Image 1 (cartoon, rainbow, N blue to C red):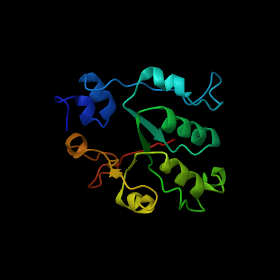
Image 2 (tube, one colour):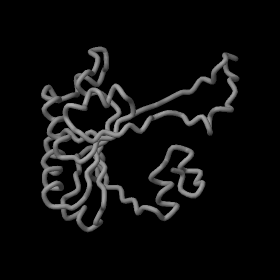
Image 3 (cartoon, rainbow, N blue to C red):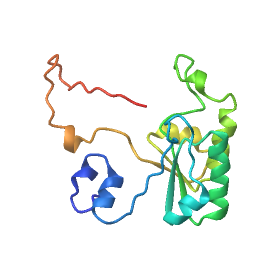
Image 4 (tube, rainbow, N blue to C red):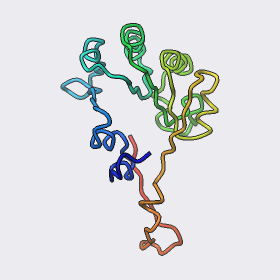
Length: 169
């Protein structure tokens, strides 16, 4: 639910909204080293100092990711949540990122999911894709909220619906 009418919650930034409402203390750990190209995974001691109730991991599939997740599972009392918005079991051949995926991606995904308490996905088809690998799956849709964007009027090509651009990582 919306914590105290917080605009950030309505804008699709629930962690920021929870932090502003003083309902959660949020800590981010960097993905990369100083040069921004080196993989940087927080050590158990880094996370233990923060004493998190919950750890969110997004698509942790690198060998170091999986190794550290094993250490987190063994040494921390945190609830570990994995988040995905892609079906790594069925990346189309036309997707330019397919060449960058590990050939044993299914094994890596299964290992990562075994180390987690919950999986958050954005769609029902993603839930279906991963349901044999983890029992606790929650769907949190990734969409533009009607309350914010519902009154937007199309002006560019004057179609019935507004045109919205997207850029992803």
